Length: 591
Image (cartoon, rainbow, N blue to C red; front, side, top):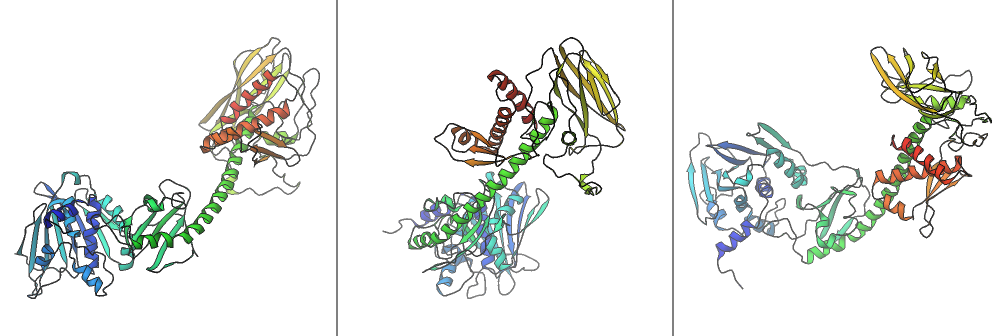
């Protein structure tokens, strides 16, 4: 078989390059192959039409016998590249081999003018037009001939109007990453339309650089791998390079590499395979030849090691996520317990109270541990030694007043009895504010009386008739005012008395997973280990694990269920459900 129409074949090949950014990279690589130290890409407008120039200080176009740039050979030997013959003769450090990179200007503009100096310092210019097999070479009048080569493309195609200098910079930073690092070439993008200038710097990967990876050696040469382990993201990918130039943005996009670890999205970086064969037209794909098979086989040992590292990373992430979720749950329940009646809720003995409800429903004073919790101290935190006050760190000092909360924010009182309410002023970071505060309590709606309206802790005295009373507290610090409300329900009868908590403080329990997919239970409380066991095989847990937010809310509901079951054991089911709603409302507010 032979090509019937050479120009028709060349046209098909030239139009196979559909990415104008890749075409610009091809022209820049020509400059790098010419040993340029500096390349300047300029985007601008002249005569009402946009243009693009690429100027370098390299060796220029090879000269003919008369010392002039051999434009005639360049124009008439498409698909018979000088570079390929140089490679065959042992010359290294050059990338092109098919001689069609120059025709990639068809995806950028209508015509190309290439200017280069001859041996006698006179400038010559070659002009080519899109879709035209002809070309012209003529002297170009200049005062002083400059070294290197200039490629001028104009007018640009309609679709090139949105191609900014910033996009060119970002693309070249990834596409030519290793070539820039190895050659030290300085690439500058000047966008006159946007009036900005960019320096192309090799892209920096994110994550932890993986050292001591197994060496990948094949019979065709060694593979170079620069890989970074990152948090799982859909944007993470590993590129395939050949001699410093990117040929595949995502290795997993190749059918034979659509497998772990490349599809797990934990890795960034690239693999450089200098022996693979590129498709001539786009140079963004690989020829499925023997070299391709060697690449696939050579990566198998590396892939196994990467899967092991990713699995270790995944376990570490799950542990960190578990600790983070536990802190969020602790904060949510701490805030909920501040807002709920202290004598009704005892979160797994953390209050260590000596509450003993009387038959008349009178409320006993909470112990110092309970007041510490109300003041914002974390459950289970060690108390300072008597006589040795702990020196606070600078970040523990409260800032200016930002908000105020009431403890409890919701409570039930028997008619004719009293309830102590405490205002908790806080700064923006929820630290308790203590200085220069003025308090003002009032009944916003309903019946009853308040004693100590100027104190931080006020006493509400219930009326003789049942009802609901809204109590408002206003806290002032200088010109800053914060206001909140508490709701007190006055009833004829109180609920049954609650159990007494006399054990040492244990703190908020943690949680652990137990896979019991065949069983129906969702969670259990292990009192001996102060631990909530979560059935991660249950269909609800599997459903909730689809997102972090949903999983967190599911865990909070399991915590709430265990608290309700422990504090209100033996109560009717409808009352348990009412308590569940009450506690869930308070906790989910702070997630």
